[in-house]
Image (tube, rainbow, N blue to C red; front, side):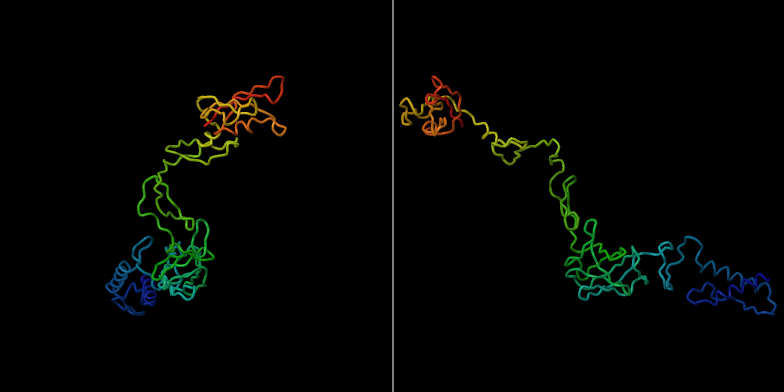
Length: 327
């Protein structure tokens, strides 16, 4: 009987609590001190307690009994099943500052990882700040690869819904409106074009990865081109067909022989037209030996020496040269 009295006393304390969380609305019998209670009354109250507790109290451990906690004044921590996501409603824009109303759930704080969802009341024209209800205003930035940068005009547009995460010193806007969206269609194994400003994929380039030549031992197809070097270049630069043609001119067929030179009375007018071989009688011009002045210069086209014969007795005025026209 004493134990039952203690139980009823504890139940009375429960009943004295707030009416918002009533588990046992009332007991069928009102027992007072000094009165005699029969077993029917005691068991009636006891059975009411058992029934109401089983029906109205939340079960121990993991359960689905608690559907809402409207009486909380401090949000639950993540370790207790709380959430880092808060709804800020409409964020009003004044100059470059966005400000939300009271959050749902209430109690948003500047804790790293907390995020707020808000609807913008206006479009930004440049860098902006965000103030979530009664917290301090802080810069609102966006990600740029591994760093953050200030917002650009129209990163936030009127009636757009945005998510901002507190990173410990400022808010990071996760979905700016000017971010480049991905392609609507793409081909497997094609090269993607990236945005240098956001790091996002712009579109499919239309170039298949397998069609690109590697740097190491590329196998070109079609008609590849390259810059043409001067014929004096002797380094490891690629030699184009134009370079090879200029460096190794092709001799023409022998055809008829033409003669040109200073001596033996042969003049340019006496040359045989169309010849591809020339016998040139050389001489000293300006103190140096020269086959060209008055000799090859009187012939059209380009020429290369095939053979030079020294003059009799080692002189310079009787040297003879055999030249062939080159293409």
